[in-house]
Image 1 (cartoon, rainbow, N blue to C red):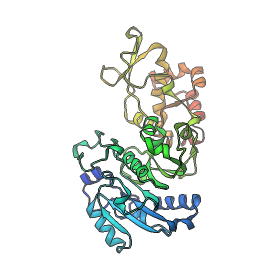
Image 2: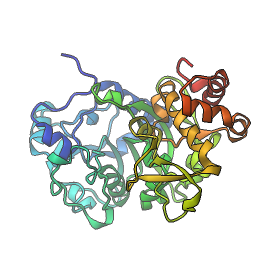
Image 3: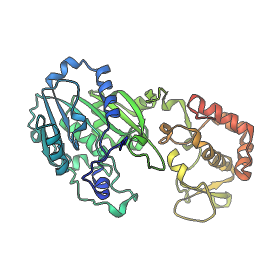
Length: 373
């Protein structure tokens, strides 16, 4: 059987959820190798130690480059035993929790050793209600210096403590493009800069998902100037299907409306409708728009903002035309063009009768990133 994304057969579904153990296929490993080839003088790598601190069965450690030493660590003891056999003990493997006691000593590294980290660390939100019925919260004891509800961010923070010179890892694009997530990167963003990357779909992980999201394969270099959110908004993200985009090219709906419950912020006498809490585009795919009932997730819509909420309602009807890599962005808008046809958006939202002006608007808004508009 062929799978794009193979999970180790020794793990149960519960183990997979708690460890976040999805193992990296050859296709994605090649992207990592290409990023290294294109950005680093590979003849210098024999002076580096290669480390994967969430290595699973070791897929990413077999690189076509010569390293001084190759180390794999994982919290899953069975995976480490498989890795030892798989690579005939030619690499250094050990079984421990890389997020607990974080120091170079654990890896028998000195302060002078040049460190290159690769990885596909787990990036499950331990507090998410998704599959919470099988989550175990004490599998990873996490050092307070890298504590975060998302294990992937904890791993990035741990790489900073180890002072790796280069880091090439897979993680959700949302870590960078969502400002709150980016701020959570703390010392990592202050000490590393994104020097190259490629975005792939989470469909490479599982073909059974109801919604795919963008994963970035990111190459970072330690840099005393780090990176700020302005750097991210202007960064040109490349995708594996030869498209690209940058956040600064878009205007977002959050500039014009409330996305979250606002009962204490609005004049109740001017409320004309209720809308469900909004997050990103992928969340909008799954959630309601206008609602009738009062609830904790209700956003109260005033008359002067009603057309904008109708816009979001109509935008949802066009989401399927957007590629996966826009999934973590906020709903975007061309505000001036919207204002000129605001009544058309109200009519479409209320009647669900299509309008050529709306089609033309989204063709122009989505541009080269539209899919079969």
